[in-house]
Amino acid sequence: MKLVLALLTSLMFLTACEMQQDPLSGASDQVREGRLPDTNKPVAEKPLPKEAMQIDAPVLVNGRVGSQMEFKILGRVMTPDVGFTLSIDNLADFPDATFDAATGDFKWTPVKALVGGRPSVELVLRITLATQSTEKNPTISVEKKAVSLVVVNSYSKPIVNTVTGQAQLLVGKNYTMEFQVEDIDAFSEDDVTVMIRDCPSNYYSDSIAHLVEVKKVKADTANPGKYVGELSIGLSSADMLPSGNYCFGLVAVSKHGVSSELYKKEVSVEAKLKKTKMTMNLAPVMKVGEIAQVAFSIYDPSGNGIVTMTSMDDIATLLPGSSLSCKQNGSAKFQLDCSGVINTTGAEAKIYTLNMVVENSTSRSNQKVTTDHTLRINVKAATP
Image (cartoon, rainbow, N blue to C red):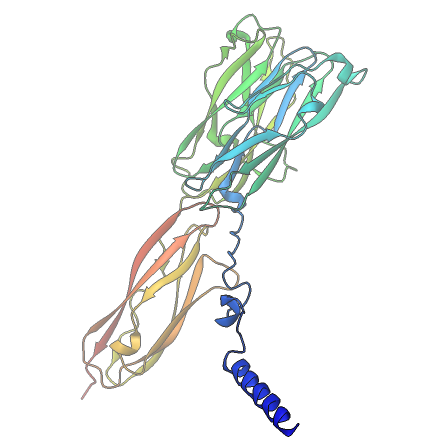
């Protein structure tokens, strides 16, 4: 009996030793290597920013019962190699309407039953732009836009149907937009008058009407009673126009002197970035052995950009014991405030040059302007 127990004890001891030799036997490589379960899990890409996806379509389209409403709905994605699809979410709400995603053409003729006995109705067309998933950009990003369709029951005065064209404008360039008006009293384009007007004073955007000009109006051969023309928006010399939203209005006047409702067109203007400037390029003249405090600013003169310091020489290397730092102004991102101490103890009598590189950029577009600045420090010999 004792012999049997001894044999069993030996077997148990040997088995325990074998288990201790490889306690992770049979475990996955992930566990054996000490990797967390999600270590190799791919990280999802962030959606594209709203500024990178644009739906080009008029915000307002005016029309009337029995007259075809026609305009383009186009999309843009400002990220290379990213495709997209355009769709109308509520196309079924517009009986017999058609939308060609390839050309962007939307066509619809409102019917009497839709308006009934009311003077007019306002309907909303809902558009969606969705990016296509790729290996490089797997995340699908979505942008939406609403287009207001105002349909009058019967014709009583000219109608400005649409104003179309790029809605994001850059100072320093000239732009062209197209408009369409309906004037059934006109026999030819000579009877049609379109005028530019300021937006009402209580409108939330500043007026840009003084920079807009109407070009020649011509008949729309595909739609009798309708006329098309061009608007020229001149921003080539509007250097001091700040970034923001602006508005101008259009009014069509018939040969009988009857005016249409004011059509308000809103645009987003991006100012052309300028090179930054410094409030001090030459530090106060100092003598060897003197210590002085300095303070100056680097700023965008138009106040439109975001100013950041890209590189700056180490002033302590030029003048040991000196220090200088530049920080973005807390209330104005277009300005850097710099301050520090200049120590000329042990310096040579000469002009020292501190080099800085400053970038002026904007979050609303891809503009970037780089400026090289220098701060000169004139150190003279101490008076005997």
